[in-house]
Image (cartoon, rainbow, N blue to C red; front, side, top):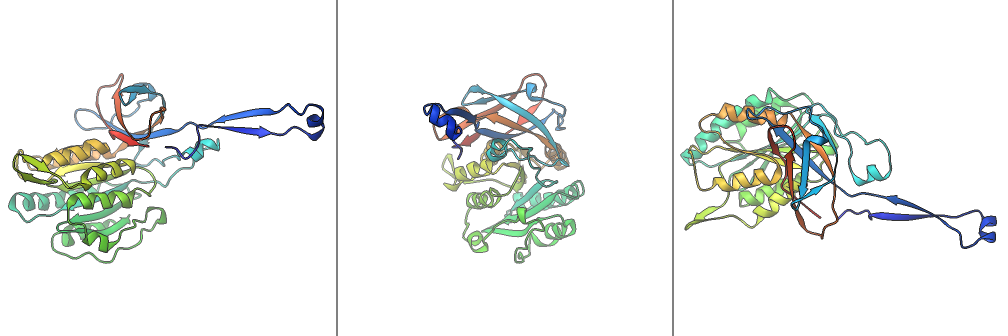
Length: 342
């Protein structure tokens, strides 16, 4: 629930003389503070390119299956400073404060020496390095990996050479150095290496990453180069109990997960978790074993920008609520988180 009440009565006292003459008269001034849900909506065409130029009239937002009032839809390109849409900014009736330029992008590599996985991971490490060449100078990049536990290789940095060395020399066989502070204190990742060493499952690792990103401002993108969640027990896939919590925390942190499956197979049993976390957070799932460059181009289109939707929060009981964003006039695919929680 919003920390601010739906409405508040401000009582303004009349002058003492007026009060003496008519003590029963008061002026009642009502100020309504509307709670909002912020939704990041990426809209792409069939080729994966972003659709720009849309307005609020091009979107319909459903919460728990019912239309919600969409207040605004702002296109946020990669070079756009993000406005402050917090309740405090609105309640003060002041011009929103812009967040710093540049995107916040996190790489997560899930390692496994099994042949069908390690070959694909090595190929995508190369593609990830090539992706760095297409980022703007203001973009911030952080790098995690998971094998038997979670490791942070670098916090958010604009130093491309540093990130490239991690991808080319360290991820597969190196040991991470002590985490360095981000040049921008607002984007410093609070990561406890000991807690990372205790993260024995990829589900737990994803939850820790979500928690570390939640306090940071603005939208984030998590590029997850992995092979899946859970384990096959009989006919069922069993995921760790942290999986659901990780999806919820990442959605709340405005972190879209783009699941890039490194498995060298047309289909495998553990891909369902990769698809679900992407759908829950507003990203997408893509296989990379046949057309890796196509997956990267699609990723570049999704990262190019998004629509910042400000939605009036309906009066609903506390709990988790479903979100669906649809296009009313344009044709394309909308990528947006599937729920929010009060």
